[in-house]
Image (cartoon, rainbow, N blue to C red):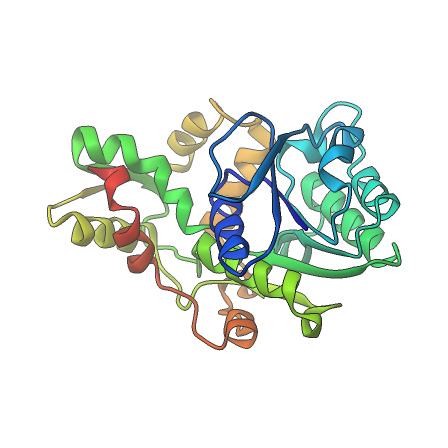
Amino acid sequence: MIVVTGATGNIGRPLTQALAEAGQQVMAVSRHAAAVPNGVRHVAADLGKPASLKPALAGAKALFLLLSGDLHATGANPADIISEAAASGVRRVVLLSTLGVVTRPSGQTRIAMRALEDTLRESGLEWAILRPGGFASNALWWAESVRAQQGVAAPFGDVGVPIIDPADIAAVAAACLLDDRHTGGVYELTGPEVITPRQQAEAIAAALGSPVRFHELTRDEAKTAMTQSMPAELADDTLDILGSPSPAELRVSPDVQQVLGRAPRPFADWAARNVAAFR
């Protein structure tokens, strides 16, 4: 059995589906009850409380570990999840990390994630680490404004990075969970090309078959909007990356091609598959 945490998200959903289609027994884990593919079991657990994973881990051979707010929940110690996995007899853990542990290692979130990477390496388990850059699915932040106003508002309209389709992250994760050749691998995951917010809006318009206006926000305007849903420090950190990506953040990685034997999907493909969100 393979346990997938974050099973209802943009990565967990396609990963769960891919593993089920590959004939694997899958335990989907999310914080709340959720619909899962036929044949997949589901359990609710809070990754901020690693002991709550015990029922899901019993009898499992592998774990896909995706943390979000759980990494910094009050009193949380994500390393305990790896300990729980080992104690339950799990042999392999695939960890979703972030490219930022390499490109911007000093941020609080990335320091914590790098420490978790080190814990996994030293655990005695089989492991693989995935380090994606920006997600194509972040464009869903614009869905409401596209539906209501046929417009996208974003800062740094002509500054791009090679964002990745979450379905490609899921495909790489499935390969790492199922194929021994990827044990000990650290994979940097990006899309096939640098793409700007303005170009993303154009791709969404092409998928819709109707115009989408682009309005460029100032940094201050963007920060005001972002701090409604995240701490100001994190908003500044994100804006630093979006406005002044480093050479390492602009690099198109070959790792998706290396693992999957095909190029990563372009943003236009993601937009076409998710066009219903923008209608």
